[in-house]
Length: 53
Picture (cartoon, rainbow, N blue to C red):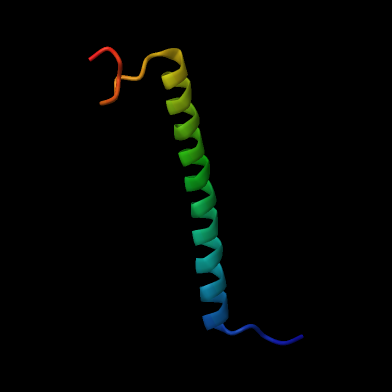
């Protein structure tokens, strides 16, 4: 079996960590989008285009 270099392991672990972070960020953004859509549908949107202004 061939030994894996330290450089490869460092890069592999950094890429794996970044990929996991991006997956968590994607999930958070999707959750925020869902919540914003629910607020808008419920009529609780207090944004700049709200009809209550």
